[in-house]
Amino acid sequence: MCYSATLAHERGLLSDQEYRRLLNLFSRCGLSMDHPQFNEDILAQGTKAILKTRDGLLRAAVPNPIGSCTFLNDVEESELFAALRKHKEVMKKYPRNGAGIEASVDSSDTGYTMNAPVEKQANGGVDAALKKTLINDDATNGQANGGLGATNVDGTTGDKKNAVQHAAGPDQDTAMSNGSANGVNGHA
Image (cartoon, rainbow, N blue to C red; front, side):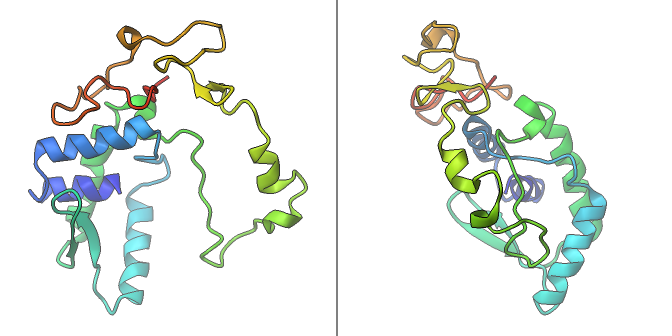
């Protein structure tokens, strides 16, 4: 979705403020904004596959404005690649270079998977994951480290003045302008 936002921004469909707002939200939530394997080859392969299944139309959904979308059919490969290069540059300014926290790729709905069904996984599958009390070393007793009022692993308590300001600057038009939401700043 963040790449789609970059494409929309490059096309002038999202303002700078809307674009930053969307990226900042994804980043604060720890969602994947980019992936090292997302490159021009993968983009070209995916676009070719999409064109085969959509009667030769791209139908690329892009935000226009936030909360609505426009479907683009007239995007040349060179424009897709230019937007990807811009996207990769923008992601360098975000925590983890835009990588998500605990991100995973599940291709089970594509028919091209080697994953065993959850109930057959030797490690207990979903049930085992739900039983974890410490996930990614960033939470204890259900509270994330560094959050307002949260107890960190080292016993300290999060404080608003210690919240990490977002790499791209705070949103000026939202209630989350201090870089934290619901007591969690979302950054390492």
